[in-house]
Image (cartoon, rainbow, N blue to C red; front, side, top):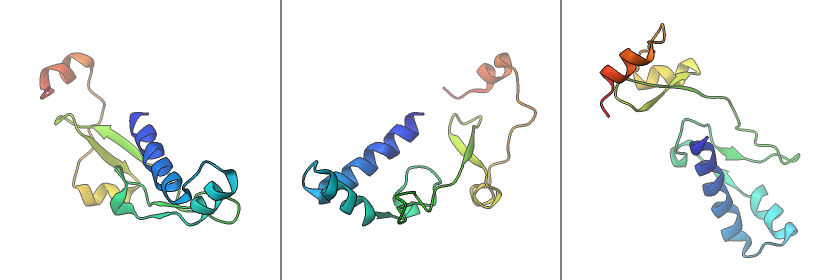
Length: 104
């Protein structure tokens, strides 16, 4: 949830900055011109680009898992998971094992 809020905050700054105002027409124009590439995203999203219906045409689901290093790793979609080289932890361990292996 925190990452989704961070992405929303980045998007808001990206749109409001060029709009220069909180007027709906200016915000809509700035949103339509938004094209955020994957390399500026903080998680493995394809990016943000709105279509004529004001829907993000690059939206997709991403599934992550917290590894033994206490970092989030993408485990789906498969092509993004393969890039990270992270092997999903399965079956999910109990809390006692998680706490004993955590690096925190």
